Length: 221
Image (cartoon, rainbow, N blue to C red; front, side, top):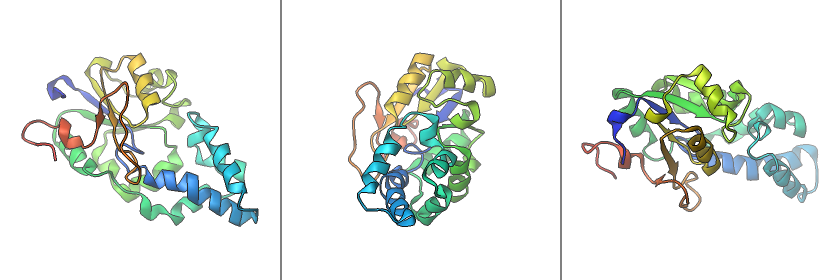
């Protein structure tokens, strides 16, 4: 599926690609609304309003900003995340894939919508930094990955040849944005959240395991 001789750069998403999206799904849709109601002593029905309010920001920098939600909701979102940080973990064979990349030739860059507060929480718990050559957050460049401007901004801080770049992300809107920019090799993820069903992506090949794109001496599981 992938001719690794044609790849100089591997751009990787974090949440839902390298990390199990279950932590974020649980936090934003269950834990935060419940704790918001408890801390502000509100009726349980308010949880629905909070979920809807969060979802309305989807695809924007606000959606990914812990500082924004702490300010908007009047709570310490980072502290609430730490209450369920035991759910943060790597997806299936992500570590094997990262270890293989480290032994191989590509430059590996984390291109994530997670802000720096999220990274400060997750990186020490997962050890991802040991396998990355660079980390670029959409918060650093001022635009989310869903926007075409992100890729031009990324090119300014981390030079790469789109025709010799592989990008893996679980978000179809982000993959489409990357395709419009001209990144040649694009892959999605079938099951970003281990607690939710697999899904097929209409426009992109979706991986169930990273092993399926490794060279022949690393057979798929």
